[in-house]
Image 1 (tube, one colour):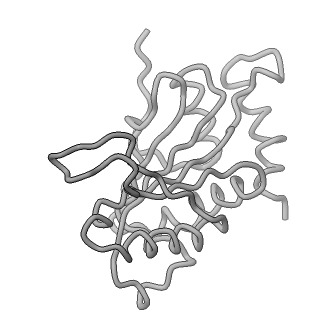
Image 2 (cartoon, one colour; image 1 turned 30 degrees about the vertical axis):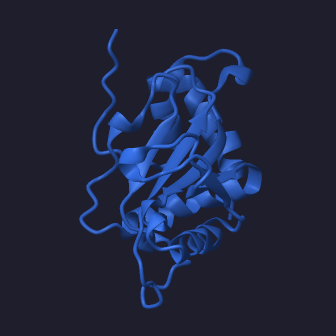
Amino acid sequence: MKRFAETIKTDIAQELKQQLGLTNDMTIPRIEKITINVGAGRALQDKSYLDHVSETLQRITGQRPVITKARKSLATFKIREGMPIGAKVTLRGARMYDFLEKLVKVSLPRVRDFRGLSVKGFDRQGNYSVGIKEHLIFPEINADEVEKVHGLEVVITTTAKNKEEGYWLLKLLGFPFNDELKVKK
């Protein structure tokens, strides 16, 4: 069986080249990195919550997360500068492709009442962000052992120049979008 990363570099790259009308192989959009982020607002009341979030992120990605800290104080949220408020993992290389394959082929189909991903998650540069409400969709997480359910955000950073290139890259990778991207001319 062909690995997901090899499929991207051979079959999908050529299809993208045709679809977008590109002449140079170096201009074909590709994925640079994937960032998985969890904002842990509950960590202000429950100190063990951030440990729980870090442990689940490590199980999902296979990489130790970095604890993110508040950049400035916000009195309305009772946050002081330097307080731990979340965790994130940045994936590149083989781990990135493994996570991407798991997300598309295993995790997203496990979402209850899944109707596809929204195309509104693209920014102008062709990067894509999707929020996942429950971390239970990942196969590494046993629902019986989970005490606190949390969401996470997945940001896919690409080398695409615009929304259309980013859309076609992810569409050919198997992302189940619920609508076609309408590009403003």
